[in-house]
Image 1 (spheres, one colour):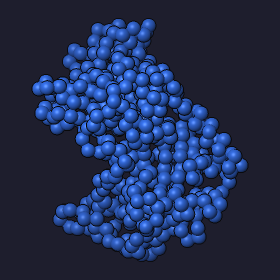
Image 2 (tube, one colour; image 1 turned 120 degrees about the vertical axis):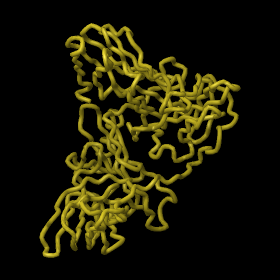
Image 3 (spheres, helix red, strand yellow; image 1 turned 180 degrees about the vertical axis):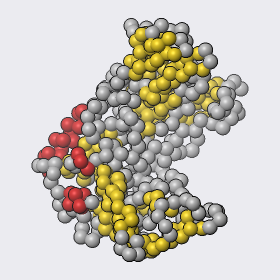
Length: 485
């Protein structure tokens, strides 16, 4: 299938046009009926205990809740450019946020102001805090959806190009996020005040009194060590279903040789990064990380079914029209990986990492040749079909538990990438190679067996230079789209 995906620039243009038509100006403040936010302090006072010799970790339990509907912010960042974001209302861009409100794609910069005063009223803490919705799901009333739908956090792959932040109507999330706030001061009674920065209160038309809360905090030290009962503990993800089939294999589906447009993923390669030269004994190797991602619109899902008693599974790719499976096709094999640290099943036909010379001729291939696919990095949650909470619909990756497994499933949802770091034995051996220009190649779907929307974005190169002398080799990594990563 050769239908190209919508480019980031086209998406950016769509956002700009929509925002201009609806709002007329990117600086226009929200109307009184626009979705907004409000702060909630469940407790007016609390005691924070800490272990002797350690700081206190303060999480006052303050929630950021939606107000007047679902609060929805969507941001994009073309490579080499700054991030831009819009508030969406009912699926359409309402107006653009000023760029100074963004901390790249990490969240809203300086959204909160935190002040802590002691019993004498002296300020002991005063700082700004970035806000990223999604550290927790808290249902505050019976309104809104039964299950939270927005992404859980502000992921930040170096190649991230689009994301979504939001709070569903009737839901809230922790204002402090995971980990709370570290405090090194003495034991005693304090007043913690949290308020939304004035610029954000004006922009989102936060109702009077909804933009600030205060909590009385008592800090107490537990002598002689021991546990820290009030230190925040990250909560495990909650599960939910979306209507996808969730139990066991997807069952019998017709074999197809020409899947319909829109039922396929679009695998795209990103350049190698975190590149370094390692000297181990007499060998010189290049270590690096690389990501292949799915630009949508459909998830990539491959299931393996055991072939008799052999440690081999026949791999089938499934095709989706929304939540419905429309067919499947044989696309390769899965094998059981017995190397230390693995002991599970790997798919063979997903990606390839190579070293090319200055004329783009291959001279070496990474020994990383099989994969247990997992959505590790959100690359662009604004692409068509992007899943904001991958794996929570029952279609998560299960790479098996041992050599007796009969079936496994591997998935890479739209909008997400799978990043692999070359571990020991997988990095590229460059011992004895002459100095000069080379290229690290990341290639998705190298054998062309997987069905996807386009093959035009399956290869990405990263230019490097080897120099120096044996035992003292040097490595220069050239920027990619202005990015030194």
